[in-house]
Image (tube, rainbow, N blue to C red):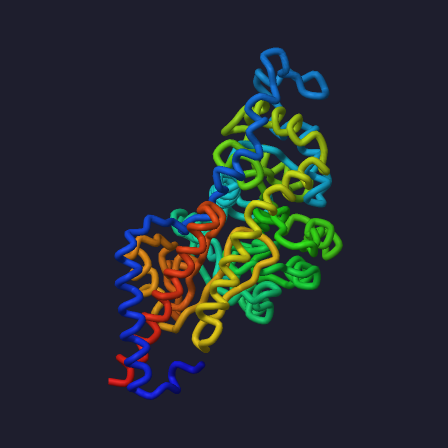
Length: 426
């Protein structure tokens, strides 16, 4: 149904009914939260054995290292071996760190701003710095750059990665574009997957800045929701083949695999970049939490252990995603103003509502006890040009709460859409 094609009387009648529905929704005094992509308590329970996998005498790594002591800046070899296979990266080029990949991203940018990315070019801070930001994207990527004085340049993101015509044009003409964010598998929030041809183009395209870098945040590469997982792209191999071996920094973590606050983060790049990063990191740290890395290595045992663990995650969260998609189809599918993603993996569903109403929808939902991510959060500077995008994070609430929240959100979206059309007709 095209809302805009309804007669004034029919649109008014629909709006009146939705106003009554919304009043009923508010009367329920809900307290639901879909703001962040957090693992549910049941997901965290999957990793409870991490708390007991080590006993008081179990503190030595496979090579005999006493994990209670200093050292080991690159991380435990046995844990790096497990995740090197899963991420398709040579273990020698993969570092295991603390609990936060965001910290590693921040450090990487900070090192580049202060010292430059190699010994041949000035520190990035010697001039203006811009980052390409595929959008909709991850709000913390954007806020990190803002906090460091980096200008954000939005680039449209589709199902198969960013608009490469626009990316090529921008990086070819502007030497101040030093970096680009990329979430290659099941990106936040759209679930986009970068195919190999796009990855190959990213590492081979000419750039005005010789020290241009891609920040390849593979946060969701292991978080599959279907039997057709996104393939792992050998981005470092592609970069080396293209003659730009040091163009890519890779990040990953177990934050949504084991404990969100006590996982292990990973960093990878070319051998030269590994030397660069660890050289600066050594001024900041003598080594990561090796006890935590040891318990992860013993908990998983091997890469198949991780895969089995991720299947258990899927069993818990896939029904929630199915509820979201099915309810959106049931409540909004009969109208022409809304569109949403059906992700193959990751942690989010991206919903587009009537242009100009996303902030109203989020406020209506909040007033009814359904907390959503702020409208525009997935865009640089928090500004969605169409004011239409809403990120849905269904993993943390129970299935019953997800159902109630999405039902209420749909009521809010319909109410805001009809109100906007009635106002435009006045």
